[in-house]
Image 1: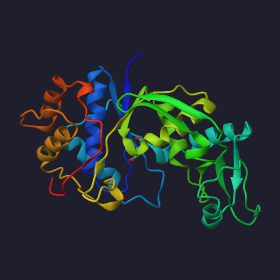
Image 2 (image 1 turned 30 degrees about the vertical axis):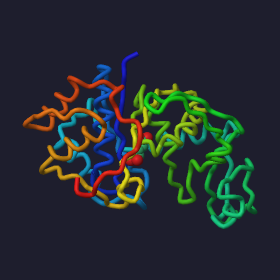
Image 3 (image 1 turned 120 degrees about the vertical axis):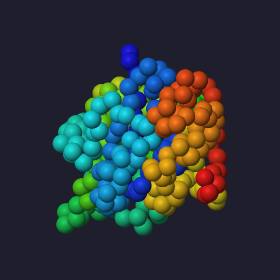
Image 4 (image 1 turned 180 degrees about the vertical axis):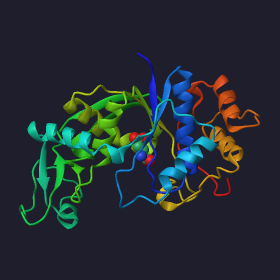
Length: 289
Ligand code: GLU
């Protein structure tokens, strides 16, 4: 089986240091295995999208020396595929409409675990659609974080796959597209480690193969919070890519080769790369990086 990896940013802001680390990590592991590296723009949430961010992220990735092996897949063009997967799940009886408000859910400990809506159906309002979560412990081995076990009902509950506004949830879109793009290995930030059980379960229900998973440690801010695009933290400068690229390699626990261009630096890093050398635990990064 040939390796196909991907980097899947959301256009909620400029490329930041945490995303650069995920891009570098996913690229190195894919190329180490002689594999392909694909790009997917996860632009399914217009409410969180920042105008121009998708273009900006793609331009930044080019400036950082990355080349995708196939045209970029935009999730905003994939509504038909998500609807088909949703209908498949609905026909098989795995989803239910839900009118619960946040307040009602909070009274239930924040998670929905009843397998059916606990509020009264309200035909005047559009429902969210939830996937019924079984009381089942899903086990898998993460290529960096080691053996994992997660009880779906306890951790995720009946999770939303279609939102009240009609928007597709990340979990569904991600699984449908990892399948569509033939992704064999997912390398991403450890904030999504917990999503993996939901995705393995969705793959099972949709008859999709399970890719391998490797979760890179998180880049935390000085207060120990995940560095996220929405906090607009540490955008990297595509006009001067080498310092941030050096920082990303060092942060991953890897040696930093000298090179004149980002592409040459990536190639030199690859020449000595071993997945076993990747740092495993999350780390705080100084804002000045
Ligand atoms: N779009 C997600 C993010 O930017 C990543 C999704 C994934 O890699 O599965 O955090």
